[in-house]
Length: 104
Picture 1 (cartoon, one colour):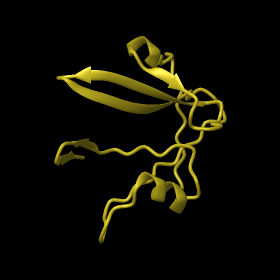
Picture 2: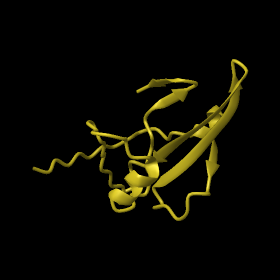
Picture 3: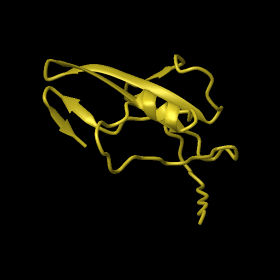
């Protein structure tokens, strides 16, 4: 079963207004997809984060959300996930890592 959703967004999201910088280091992306990087120091710790932003009003915009909910053995790295799922345009790791703890 395939479900298709269509959205009409009435505002333009601009991450640069919050200190994010557009990065072009990820190769050629579709015109509707941009990657932004944020670096800062929070509580004396260096923070580096990335977001993928898209123009949802662009008729070429297409998304699939993939994930691996259950694992046996080791979890795939983002690179392994990229390779195993036919090279998607963006792979975002949803975990937050800090010292010896993992928040997911």
